[in-house]
Length: 106
Image (cartoon, rainbow, N blue to C red; front, side, top):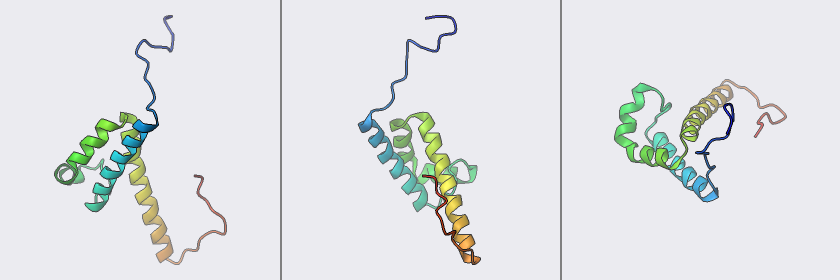
């Protein structure tokens, strides 16, 4: 191994399909708990007491079964998806019309 080598003796192994599924199931349980308790942003301090009281077990499972970077990504995605959904509902309520072509890049 050279001085500037990118390889490491403790290389990280990507989760296999079954581990990813376990992570996704834990994520779904956690996000369902957030939704059920009207938590709009798990990063905001004003929701921390609700999360600790109502979703502590789900959060612990989620964080233990998923890679740390995935946990952060899924929480951010939850917030973005809620904002997008709220924006679309607001536009629809104001008489906005859907474009004649899809804009999703999924």
